[in-house]
Image (tube, rainbow, N blue to C red; front, side):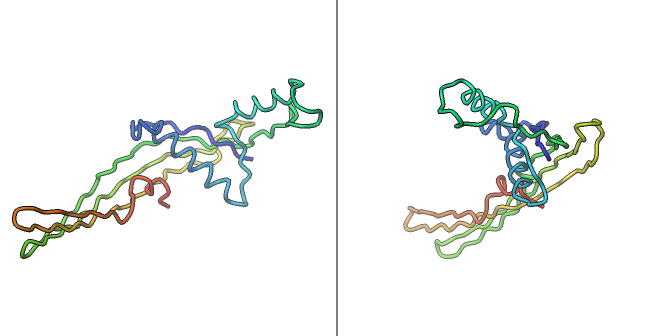
Length: 170
């Protein structure tokens, strides 16, 4: 049984989403739970589970409905770690061109992520496994501009979203 503890964030990235540590903890929990070899117990939202158990024991539900107190499964191992780097613009490349009032450009930006992970035995406190994971991914934007007699318009399209995908890089 595995439990995933919120990853510590040393980067300050994605503050409006609660930090990259929170975002990556959710991704890691889902990725581990989706693999049949692992059984993952919920630890991030444990308060909601306990609240539901308390409701079941309050006498407000029909007899036999709701979860029973004292039936949670313990974790044999905790996955924990630190996000040590999250840099969305480590490499940028741009190409521009144009002819007869029509122009275009293509630019790409590479994001980088590093996480130090540990799997800790909950009985002994020993680190059973440790690894640094690094990921890179690139988003590419292509644009077209047209100029007609001093007026112009343009269009830009993104091929991929690097900031979201870098967290799932393998």
